[in-house]
Amino acid sequence: MSTVTSATQTAQDILASLARKDTTTTSTTQQSKNQFLTLLTTQLRNQDPMNPMENAELTSQLAQLSTVEGIEKLNSMMSQLLDSQASAEGLQAAALVGRGVLVEGKGLTLTDAGAIGGFELDGPADEVVLSIKDASGIEVASMKLSDVEAGSQNYMWDGTTTDGSKAANGSYSVSVTATQGDKTVVSRPLQFAAVTSVIRGASSTDLQVGDLGIFKMSDIKQIL
Image (tube, rainbow, N blue to C red; front, side, top):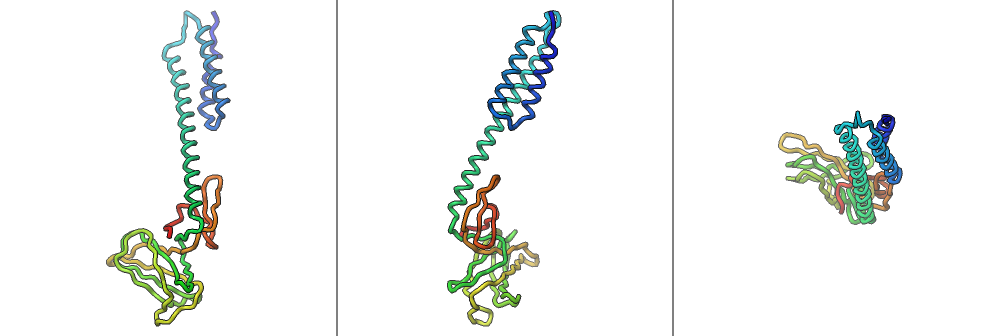
């Protein structure tokens, strides 16, 4: 009786193909698995009685098929999880439209109602000094805060300058210096603006923050 070595090789080729094609469609994948089972059945039916397939070989091929099916199910679950996460992120982003947020930046806009700004610390600080400068780079006011925790913080400037006068409405810049004892704490100024729109991309959901530009959800340091 003839053997079917070629069928064995083809079955193994199908398994290898299944393992490589993570993006294979369900119908194509199922068709390939059916071909494998058909070839394996044919191999068992036509094997040489004097030289039957070893149990270990049969077990190995079945184990390969089981592994491939497990990978396919895992890929499907991960795809569903990512889709769900993207949908939740989109809803969260949509809820931010019209809300004020703090993002990394040194700008500060003064209006009749005052100016809102923020800063971020990598660690706690005994003292934080905010230096507010005009368009010429001249310091017009400063603020000192004590015992500030790590993370993002916000503040309001009423426009009062160092000499007690009222600063003109407009754009200013802020620099931050933070210390803990005699050590400097890494700090960054944060800028305030309102979220004006949501941009849904292929891989992420981004936010248009006023005229500051486009930011990712992870770039939002604080929602006010």
